[in-house]
Length: 366
Image (cartoon, rainbow, N blue to C red; front, side, top):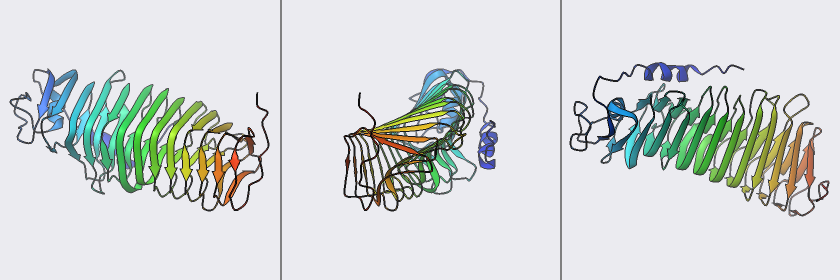
């Protein structure tokens, strides 16, 4: 299935492709500083002014390091490289067709971003756009104020995205992390990440085979879903959510849907808390002819769903299994509708809900 990109994303690709590398000797490590000049050789003693100039002159596989605190401009990355901001280097991208960082490297290239503050100021389009490259890691960064997405992955071949120790916030019309590869095998790891005040916290609509792992992370105060796993295509999709908190979102906490796929969708939630979401806390959804979808909820809490169920299975293709978990203070404890199957291992605590406190059908423990 082909993915048609919004016009703004095409504009980003075209704009960023205009960068060209000058014919200079390439060093393994180069530097930028507030007092630098792009006519300098980008050494520690004579640093450059912008990240883009430093990327153009650094050797493949090299490192670009910010010496001090300043704004060093948006960048387009076309090689293996590490960008080290030391928690003080800023990137401001405020035009409505701009990405703060555009990764358009080779299919075997590895790109690392560390310690950056990437600012859209409420008008920039995308914080980090991942188009081509074997892997992209984003560590210890702040990404905020973009209108389309904080992080946007649109790879077409095998790829890996790692986001860790990162704060993504304040983009009420945008998605915090938008996973939309159109092909290949995709591995996504989200670790110790907070995504707040967006339209959706995390959306994955991967068309290829994908494995998503989210752990020790928070998705809160997003106007739609905290996490929306809704793959497309006909492949196998696996997801694991461990020690994840989804709270006070305007729709579902964690939605796992096979409605746009004909493959297989399997997800597990463990040691996690969903609380105060407007609709469902945890929900599996799929119908006949769509991807068989299974969600396992283990050692977790579903509480305070305002108008719907703490745990739910919707549609004849959806199954939700629950074990050793607490379901309490929801408008409905649990629900299985339109042929959905919700089953319990008989060791849950389902009480204190407005309705739906009776035990679900049991699975025999083995």
